[in-house]
Image (cartoon, rainbow over all chains, first blue to last red):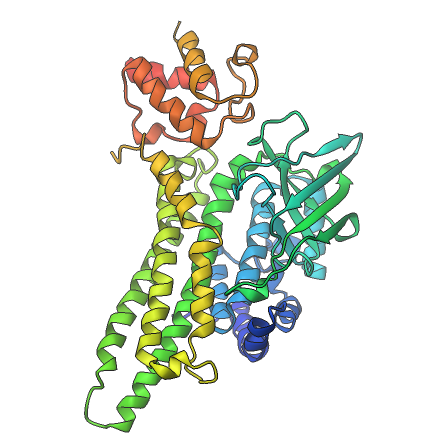
Length: 389
Length: 79
């Protein structure tokens, strides 16, 4: 994709080439945090890219963030996923907590220190449902206490701060949630397991028991349910879409290079693999088109006057975003598998420059880590009342 | 009258932990524990009870956030 070369895009390309690519293999092999790339993202001020200029950030839009994620994912999908997950947290704060002086101050600090924010939505006993919590905020005067038994916290050990979902208070219903930012100095994490997965190994997402305290100002006023529908869900799927596009593009580019090599070896003929490449590029185009269409629609809807009560919060819209997630994450492993078949044994070998191993393993995370079956079950439920009129 | 019927539907299909009778007509049903999944069942039961169909434009959080909001939607559809 021809990205307009804005300063943030240029910085992302630099980080991808110089700091993500050289370590991607080691990050994958050792399931270790991509520290070089994330340090470079901080140095280039990419962690605050979305923060509005009035608070010192670059004030870029979601479309540009999706491009940045794709650029990173072409070299190291784990780095891209970490960046995407961090941005979901920043966007949630910017969109829903900006009238809170504590958060205004926090954003200024984030720009200065480039804090990496991890998300804590998973919890033992809620079965992966982001919109349910067992743990509850316990408020005592100006202070709160919060303990959460999380089944997974991506880059939990490497994050600076955490954004946590919890029930609004100990009497609240499971679905009546708040979102709370807790600071590094105010929480402890006890690691309860490992992270030895097929793919996305660099995201380092083991289970943790989190205990935290803080000031009540850190509890965001807007109910998490509203934030989830308007921002967290659509923005997640779009930023992850950037990650999937980058992962797919990396595989497609290897296949392209392979086919070109064959063509050069036998000038004047079109190698049989070129036909497969033509199919592959068409699959890639479909993936790109569906992410782009949803991105354009979201950018329009999210700035509309009725964003809080309009189309964004409708069932029809959540069905559409869920379908994007399902279609794109089913397409991704197919694209990489096809690229693998084009490169043949050289794609299968781990020590070849056409190796597809990491891309294929990373690609499978997309349908698994946020389970497509759960999303399909939600859609099945919505379709009981949706009429598509 | 219709608010009583709405209350009855919520009681049967809303899966609330709290007592529906203690909820005010303008209380936030999502805050009271209505999940997205339960809200679909509520919508289906309302369509059945009032013999109507909610058009897709009405299938959004704000339309089902309180007994008053549901009542207003039903009034609009049956007017």
